[in-house]
Structures are given as structure tokens and as C-alpha cells.
Image 1 (cartoon, helix red, strand yellow):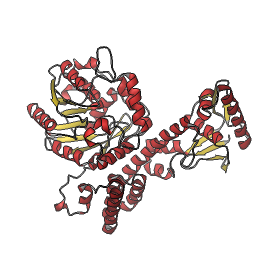
Image 2 (cartoon, helix red, strand yellow):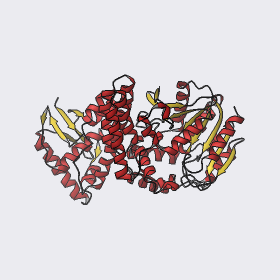
Image 3 (cartoon, one colour):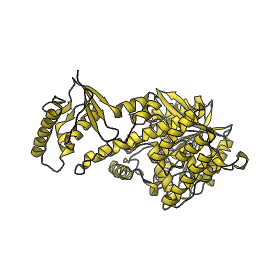
Image 4 (cartoon, one colour):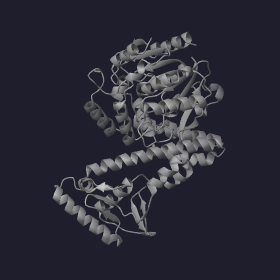
Length: 515
């Protein structure tokens, strides 16, 4: 059996039985890459349109035939199996793809192996400027793989510092900084590695480099929490991020943290993206965490597929979120908790409240909704067409502070906040993955569960929320037996932006009433 190797992390290379095979024709290379990544038959029309979008159908198919001929000549072998309707790599070949090997290593916790395999970004230096659809596909794939590398490196740094191997941790933390020089989280990882290794001078130089990057690019100074790493413990006033822990459920590892002490326990379920370590970079978010942790023990976690939790290939569901909540509560030793569902995390909390009412003292829904898209009897959500437009806008602006004007209009123009949000998005997910999350939200509908919620429920919503209309909150409170609706002034969707006092007071009073 002949062995065909693809090296796609970096500028693409092809090897046949260990011998490097030059392939000068870029569209021939692109066709092989696309078929390898697909791992299944691809319609001939799809391939033709992908590579010759400007050509009519007959011309595109003729060019495809010539390209297949050139591949056969270059490799002196039949690499592509062709049927009347589809193309695929020949089933007799033994195919090895480094991007797939990298993902497999990530999936199975072989993070050191994964980091070593990732020698460059997906198809770095390779492009087809006249093929926009191919360029978009490559962009999504590149961002997804970079996101997984970031996640693997963050977990490696944490594990190796805990294991007393700060020098190795420093190597991985240096790569993290290289991936995103404006991420204070990455700089803090490297500063901690230097300090753990006893190299204070290197830690001080890294803080200086961090400050220089932030000043030159954003015109801001490092967050006090970053500066505090080099201060004596007695002088540190900023709250310290707790250690990230993991629990396995359905074969997936979920990242979680606990802050403060209870009772009560307070479990926070985030919206469509989260990152339990990057949230500590923002001073407003950190202040909110500190305030809630004074009410009770706060349990934070990343749902499957986002943040520091394992990536999954399937769309998130409310049932999966309910299982995640249960697993994290059990791992944290929480028998009963106050559950807070934020935005898109709310429907999964409703599912949990119906399935496990004995595990809750109460339910708080913030800026949330029962149904993702509009219906004749649910007129205050986006239509499917509006969802598609919003998704395209979000994906098109990925890598920057995408949709911050929707989620936090009061922060538009705040360069530090915008840089933090852009960095959190890149670390928490990828444009392709988040598109699936948006589709899942569009299709979510838990209206049939609302009448079955039996735990005390408080619904909080800002009056001018641009992401989720306040009427969606009123609907929740009206349909949940005994549900109470409290409208808070403001336009921001994020709970840690704007006036936090009404939200914090509502949570505190609710927790005290149902303690």
C-alpha cells in the first residue's frame, strides 16, 4: 500500500512513500488538501466551484479534469478516485495528515505531542486570491487549529508549573505570547513560569515587554493583576485567579474554578463563549467575580467545546449543558447551589432545573431567553434570516472585537476592553465552531419546559439589551411558576459591564431569601 503524507501545518508539502513530491500547480495542491481534510467524497461541482468560481459549469469541469490529470502525472499514481458525481482520495492509499494527527493528540490529552506537531499555522504562506470560498475555508480551519494550540499550551503551562517544571512551562508560555502578544493572560503565564524558576529578572523583563506591547498597540497600561505578580504578597490587592481544575463527562474534560467560600454555592453558566482564565484579565469582570464570591462560593466553568474545556465536533445542546452543570457541581463537591444562567447558557439551566430540582436552591436567569428564533407566538427574537446575517457579521470580524457594540455598547472605543474581548474570542473558540453555536442557539426552544420549573426563579434583564430583547426575559418570568422579573436600566448585555449593583443586590437578596 502506498503512503501519502500531507504536511499542512506550515507551507504545504506532500510526500509519497517518504519522498517529497513537488506540486507547482497551486490549484492542484488546493484540491488534494481539500479532499484530504474532507475525509469523504466531495461532489465534483463543489470542487469545481471552489477552485474556479468565475468559470461557467462546463469550463470549470474541464479545468477540473485537466487538474486531475496533472496530479496523476506529478505523482505517477492514481491519488484521486473519480466517480460520475464525486471525488475522494483513493481508498487504496494510506493517508497521513499532520493537522488531523495534531487534533487527535489534543483529543486524547497528548498535549506535548500536539504542541510539537504544530510547527506552523495551517497552510501558512499558501493562498488562492481568486478563490474566495477556498480562502474562507482555509481561514476557518486555520483559526480552529490555532485555537486548539492556544488551549493545549495553556493547559501545558499550568500542568508543568504545578509539576515543578517551570523551565519547560516557560518554553510553552513563550509560544503563547508569540501567538497573541496583546494577551495579558499569555504574558502572565510566562511571568509566573519565570518566577517559579527563580528568575525574577526575566519576569521583570517580561512585564516590561508586556507593558511596551500594550502601550504601543493600544495606548494602555498593564492591568494591576499583572503588575501584582511581581509585588510582595502583602502588597497585592487584586484578587488572584484560582487554579483551573478539570472533570470528565461523556469523555470530555471540562475546565472549572471555584472562588470564595459558601454557603451558598453559586454556579455560573456562561453564554456562547467563555474562558475561565481569560475572564480574569478584565478588571470589570474580575471585580464582578470578587463581589459574587463574597455572597457565596462561586463555581465557574467552560462548557464543552469552548474555552479551556475540550473541543467537540457536535453542536452544543441544552441536554449536554445540563450534564456539564451536574458534572461540575459533583466535582466541586456542591450538593445544592444557586444556578445563574447567562444569555445563551440560560436554556441549559432551565433543563437542569427541571431534571434536578433537588440540587438547586434557586435559579437566576440573566439576559436569557426560551427560544432562539422568532415564531408567530414568540415575536421578540431574531428571524432565521436575521440570525444568518448576524452570524456572517460575527464570523467576518473574528479576530477583532466582534459585535462588542451589541454585547457592550458602553465599551465601544475602549481599546483595552476591545483588545481583551478580541483575545478572549480567539482563545475561547474559532469562527467555524462559533457558527455552529449560533446555529444551535437559533434552533433552541425550551418553552415546553418552563411550566415544569419548580425552583424559585428570578429573571433579570437590562431594559435596553441589544443582544436579547427584554421581552424575552418577561416571557420567561411569566411562564415559569412563581417567576419574578426585575428590569435593570442600561443597554449592556454583559452582566459585569455598566451598573453592577442592581444585579449583585438581586442575587444577594435572592440567595439570602432561599438559603
